[in-house]
Image 1 (tube, rainbow, N blue to C red):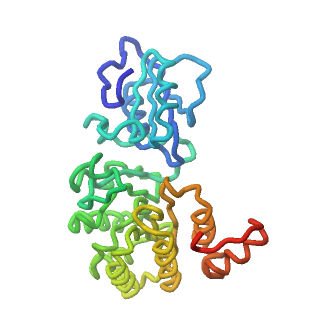
Image 2 (image 1 turned 120 degrees about the vertical axis):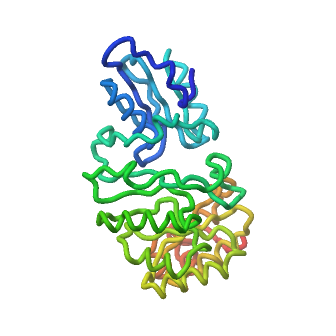
Image 3 (image 1 turned 60 degrees about the vertical axis):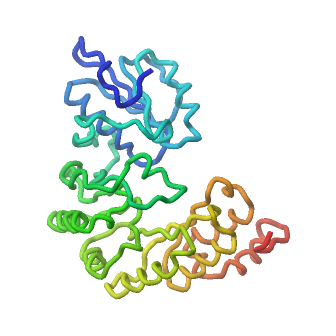
Length: 325
């Protein structure tokens, strides 16, 4: 078994090598597999994509498995044992494995996913923050530019998904990327969210000048950042951006009351929250209720959490519940 960064063992003693690419998990098209697919397509090989970790019914010359969630690691490694020539990678396997440069900078082979109608990729890697819950500093290192949109933008697509982890940490590069998006009249999804603590009047105006779909995304992970978040929301509104989505990490170095406080503040400011439950509280009853309320905008704006709990207490859950439970 080889890791996904070692392509030297790929057999090319014959034309048209039969390649199986397995996306173990995740819903988006897998970027690493898209680039590996381009490499093999350029060589004239036959490509098959499999989503999920069922055992294939036929044999292949070479198999790639990409796993992004650590809870699927053992299953992915066990699946890999079935193949004589297999490469396994992804952040669910380890944080040190990367594609070789000659593969990393290839145009993704979007035809691997016939229903994919957007382009995706990174223009920067890394992050200057060192959040305890985040793998990015360990996996990607210091923040730096690595490409522009032309490296991964397929001109058949009018929408791009940027996977950058902290694009606003590179102000000049951010301006360059926004300029390229505007020049080509594209819409964009800042999929990994932007750092509202680094927002300025200038880059807020730049964000207002482009089409963002589905909406701008930011994060509010720590209650201590409230002043900077408040200032960021004001800056956005001054630029004409009245509503954005905020990822809210819950249950990591925060109390339930801290999490509810942040959600209530976002409600007052008329922003859109998305509660992300840390694994230690993911299945805890109060946090399930909190997510049911916060992650449904039509409910979130209609009633407070207390009103929601009172209603659900009898209609769905059938038992008493208080916020301190």
